[in-house]
Amino acid sequence: MGAKVPRNFRLLEELEKGEKGHGAEACSYGLSDGDDLLMSNWNGTILGPPHSAHENRIYSLNIHCGEAYPDTPPTVQFVSKINLPCVDQRTGKVDPQRLPCLSQWKRENTMETILIELRRFMALPQHKKLSQPPEGSTF
Amino acid sequence: MADESTADETPVTFNVKSSSDAKYVLTVPLSMTIIDLKTKLSGPEYADIPPDRQRLIYSGRVLKDADTLGSYKVKEGNTVHLVKGAASNQRQNPANQGSVNAGGTGAQPAAGVPTNLASGTGQDPLAGLTGARYAGYAQMPNANMFGPDGGMGPPPDPEHMASMLENPNFASTLNEALANPQVIDQMIRSNPMLRDMGPQVRQMMQDPGFRAMMTNPEALRNISQMQRQFGGGMFGGMGGGGNQAFPAPGITDTTPGQQPSAEGETATPRQPDATPQQPPNPFAMFGNPAGAGAAGGANPFAALFGPGGMGGMRSNAPGSPSPAGTQAAEATPQQGANPIADMARNMMQNPQMMQQMMGAMGASPPANPDPNNPAANPAAQAGFNPFAALQGLGGLGALGGAGGFGTQDDRPPEDRYAEQLRQLNDMGFYEFERNIEALRRTGGSVQGAVEYLLTH
Image (cartoon, rainbow over all chains, first blue to last red; front, top):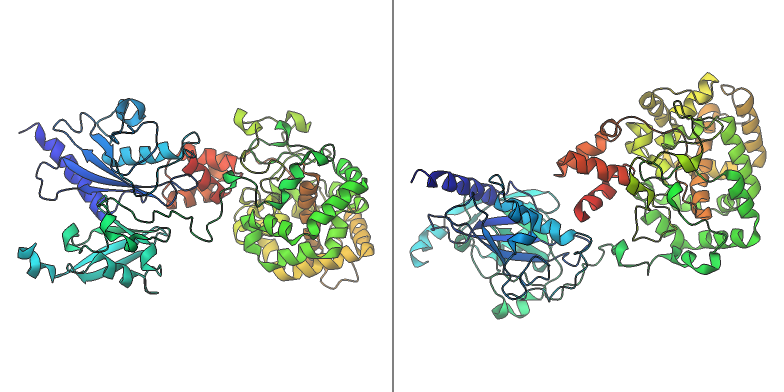
């Protein structure tokens, strides 16, 4: 049990930050099932960065925090279809090897870090003009 | 949820945070549906956004119109994010809407949203100038034109500009361009400072006298002569370096081409997506906050009365630096936006006055430059405006993109951009290094820096 407390403390902290809206404006996250005491499954949204193909879009993601979180990164999966090099085009899963904040995961990173990094990734000059599937389609 | 039906009637107080940073506190029953909430928010006392353009996001989910607040477990004190989206067609197909559908499959960019510069130059009336037919007239931007801040370095030699204008082809092209209200609009639109200055700018630019003056090589020569008489200090507030006759203190090498470039990247035009010939900020000097100190932001003209200019006039020591803040502040009350346009017109239509003024300035700066003018000193200062603007437009005309004159600001960037950094911090950009970089690249424009930060 002792090993699990930090995980849940951390997740509670993140939950509060997400619900109270203290985080960055463009990203939001929260528990997908508020009754889940293990706080494993989360929803995230990313507002598409302006001046890119993602402008005015809202992307939804599922985030799964395993038991070893935050020692190991959560798995992240897009629900909204998106054309992005780090996203598996069949499943929507984010390839951890292709997103620096996941491949070089640090314990201090949070789900918000990931969402912000993904948003930055979308806005990179080489990615911001990728043609995108119709808005609202899902994996 | 049947067991929650009673709990649903209890009111909950939560915050709605909109993308414009406004925050609304609402107390509504949990049984309220999202569409009702949106309708409530669409009122003028709240966000004033039509319900179909509102996107509400809570806890990582886009809230669906049909659901209630209770079903999303919105709790006391929580924050729901409100985003203004494109007009949505989601009510036409509510059945198709998955829990993740943000709606708005149309994804039309909202009306009034400025089109991205990156998307092309289709709407840019200056785009035509990129054409090969101007080859030879137009000086293409090259690495040397960009100063250490990614801004403009020293301007092209005024003589060069004047002789260019002597070419009737070029002069008429420029004249034509300036007669085109679209071009003026474009210029105003592309510069937040000009935009803020309101209708006077347009008036000033559309004034035939002003245009004539700008395209008149003689006038340009006069101006540069006058500029020399002021020892380069006149444009001191404008944040640039090199009047070659009077190098800034500490700068021994006045060759424009060898201006040290602080960053390698600044050698490339910093708006690669925009029309290359369009100087990114031809009017930087109007209110370049980097130049004029505190007053620069509030009064777009304050920059014109920067340290060098005032110092030169008062102390008879051309170019002698004096504290920017106080000088600019002193200058501010002496002039308003409106008289300036008149003054400008006045000046331009009266070559004698200009001559006189130049003479007076050259001989004894503190003297009343024009005995006929009861407004004396302030008037003379206001009189600088047309020329400053002129130089800016001249830069545009020559497509040389010379935006600024004056001395190089060698304060460390965190001082120079203190005010802008604070604004960026307020907006939630906390990465100091990146903020500085963005400000350097945009020459201190907060708006530009935000764009840069969001896209890099």
